[in-house]
Length: 266
Image (tube, rainbow, N blue to C red; front, side, top):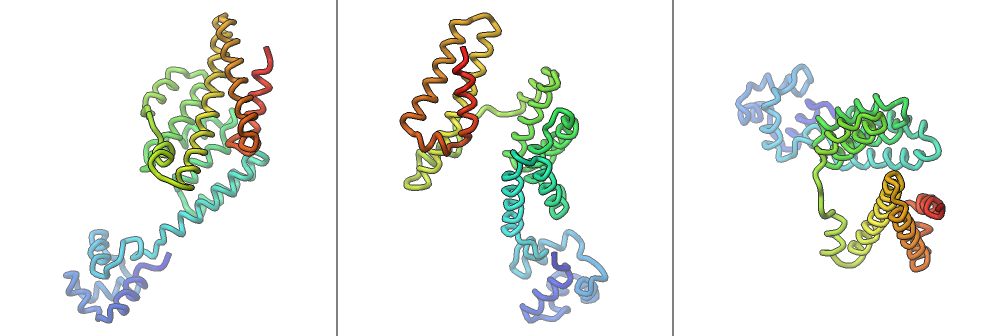
C-alpha cells in the first residue's frame, strides 16, 4: 500500500494546487498538510472522507487500495487451495495460511481455512474460527457457512443442544439466487445457473433419501427404508441414462458413484 502522505502529494500535484490551497479547503494549517506529505504525521481519521471528496476519489483510491485486484488475488489463493484439498489437505492449509499472512483476518480465506482443518482432533480450532467469523463478518454467505460448520462440529462432538441452537441462527431460505437467474434471465447465464442449481438439488435429494433411509432403518421401518433406497437408485439411474455426460462431469460425480454403491446394498 502506498504511503498515504505520498498519495496526498501525488493527488495535490495532479490537481496543480499548493499546500496552502489544500490546507485552506480543509480548514487546517499548511504545516499540517506538509507533515502529512512528508509522513511526519497522519491526517485525523475524520479528515479522510474530506480528503477523498476534495480530490474526487474513493477512500480506497486514497489509500491506494485496489479492491478488485485484492479480490482477484484472494480468489486465486482459494482456487489453488481448493484444487489441493482432496489429495493434500495439509498443502491446501499451507496455501491458505500463506494467504492470510498477505491478507490478515480476511473472512473469505478464514472461511476456506475451515475446509482444511475439520479433522476430529482439530474441532476446537475450527469452532473458534467459526465463532469469530460469525461475530465479525459482513458477508452473509460466510456467516451462514460458518454457522453450518459450527453446527456440524457440535453434532460430531455429540453436543446436540448446541448444534440445535446454532442451526436456529440460520434462516430458512425458500429460493436461491441461482433459481432466480435461471428463471428470469436468458441464454448462457440462465443455462449455467440452471445446471448449477440442478446439480445442487440432485445432490441434496440423494443425501436426503440416504438420511431418510437410515432413520427409517433405525426405527425398524424396513418397508419405508426400502422405498427410499429404490427411489434413490431410480434417480441415479435416470440421470445416468438421460444425462450420462453430466453424471460423469457433474457437481460431485464421485459421490454419486458412492451413493449408487450404498443404495445397491439391501
